[in-house]
Length: 324
Image (cartoon, rainbow, N blue to C red; front, top):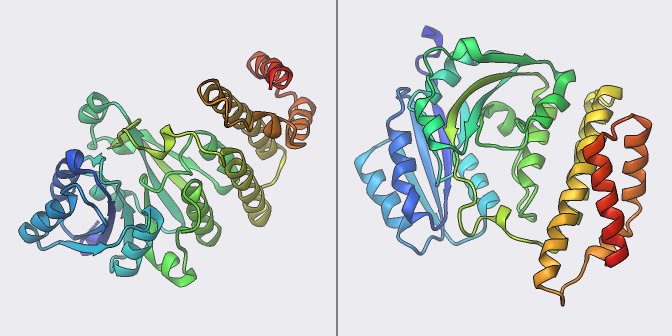
């Protein structure tokens, strides 16, 4: 560990109107046992007092820097943080979340060449508070690059908040979050990074990150007219990623098409529920007429992925078509 003792870690935190939660987040960052770090707060045009909290914490801790800017969205805020970061490693933390006091130190202990370190996360505060960082080495799983879809299926790939990033890779290849999309940008960034980093994953199955789920106003709670198109975009970039790194094999296809069908059905169900209360805004019929449904169903059938749950979903889709 001695050679890593002076490694600077940059923690990037986009902040936008999270006044009720921001102090808890910043307290968890300031309490990190790893002291060699800089905390970069990107105030994305907050109007609820979050901006004042950022300034107060920066005045009390020299490791904290604040950048105030007009509101441009979370991707632009993270990109601004990347531009300002001087650390060898990068971390992203959402301003309404908290991290275990030893998370950064565990990351540095686990770091090794050619490996992306990922930690577990939870939405249950009692689980997060009870977790122990002391025995993290007993809860490590290694996944090789060829096992990418296993990590993706278990939801380790998509989030940016659960990883330690090598800053030199991000800088060398100019990897940034796309600012012209507001859903799916995390996957885009992580696949762009992984395609250049090219390595395995070290997953620490301790929930060292606590994230708030279903906060009022969260994008994940809102129906969007472009949900279907975003799903198509994500499926496309995922497919090209696997092609580019040479892991588009039968095992990957099984996970890919099974998840594809499940996500398509979820979008159909969300649209169905929305239309019940908004009959003037009907898109489900158009979505269900898209040829992707037949194609993905055929791929699932060919690979014997149609368990009883997916067959029931198929019946629901047929009923949706009849009544849309």
